[in-house]
Amino acid sequence: MDCFRIEGGRRLEGRTRVSGSKNASLPLLAAALLVDGTVRLRGVPRLRDTDTLLELLAGLGVRWRRSGARDLRLEADPGGPTEAPYAVVRRMRASVCVLGPLLARRGRARVALPGGCVLGPRPIDLHLRGMEALGAEVRIEHGTIVAEAPAGGLRGARVRLAGERGTTVLGTINVLFAACIARGRTVLEAAAQEPEVVAVGEFLNACGARIEGLGGPTLEVEGVEGLGGAETVVPPDRIEAGTLLLAGAISGGRVRVEGCRPAECGPLLSLLAASGVEVAVGPDWFECRPWRRPPRAQGLVTRPYPGFPTDLQAQWMAFSCRCAGVARIREGVYPERFVHAAELVRMGARIQIGEGEARVEGPVRLQGAEVLASDLRASAALVLAALAAEGTTVVRRVYHLDRGYERLEEKLNALGAAVTRRPDPDAP
Image (cartoon, rainbow, N blue to C red; front, top):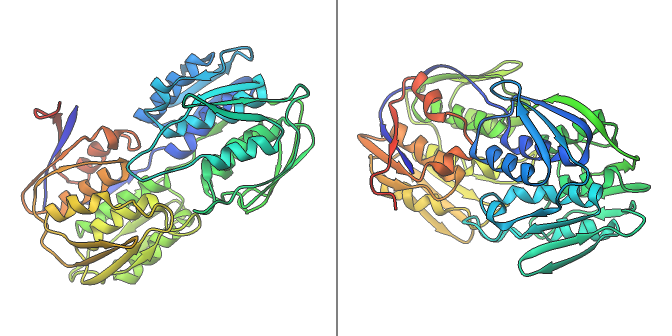
């Protein structure tokens, strides 16, 4: 198990490039189960999560090989296994995205329930209700989802995908997978509008699916007999793009993030501008400029796309520690997602948590300390705080970070940071 040793206080300068989207890559890889032919994906990031899903797919009869460092060719055996075991699923909740393809193409699926996580309960009831609406029989047996299609196959239906916490990205994609080859017409109401859903839908259309309304809250799907192979480029990771921009901003430096889609990061860019951080924007890049006085604190409420993403909340909290005033950060997606606050407090932050809201008072002089990462985005927040802190910070459990950021320490070091990856001598 590795840790990061970070020497703080260095102003970042330069250009960096965004990797392919983790949240788009995982369902795009799973789509191979649904396709009769070869799937070619370009720009798949080398991450722990993509490696985990490739391991799971191999166990489900998908043959894959790399045709470049980040290019993959996949082809599924239509008669392969239908069980996704807990030993693999427990390592990554997104493994549940194989449910829809397995059920639709092979007629049945056994997918282990992924269990809880530090973000609090993340129920998959909307996935299951969607499959039932399409005619599947769904039950839970000994911690495993068991889903079976009727004898004549899945059939189109009207499915509403909103729950107590709003829309569901993976739930939308899972039901979309199944609807593509269901008989008749399916209407998905309250569908997630995230760019990752659009990327998957456009790829499915390239394979022969008939999906309309991508990017909006209502999707209409006319089922087809089957899908053929196709090729696509994984879109840039908007969360990594925002994290890198905030790394530059928290250091007071000048960092240009290239290969991104600025329109997908609108809420972040608006908040930075409101704080007083100058941000220049181009067609496929954005750049933060140095600031001489502390930025002004800006509060926010996380929302599903196109709102401020919950996956950037922890990083914004770290940045808020350097801002003048009080930032009230409310979680509208995962109210329990404030575990990182306690570790930031260890570094000198002034943060109070209560009733689903964090109150961050600044500016403070962050100090290096030993901190423990609890999840993927919390890891990124601690790294950002360490960049601005006085002295040395050791961030433990960076395997969380490796799930979703490709070579982050190398990208930061190329901008002037001092991040060293090394084995953690205190790891169990």
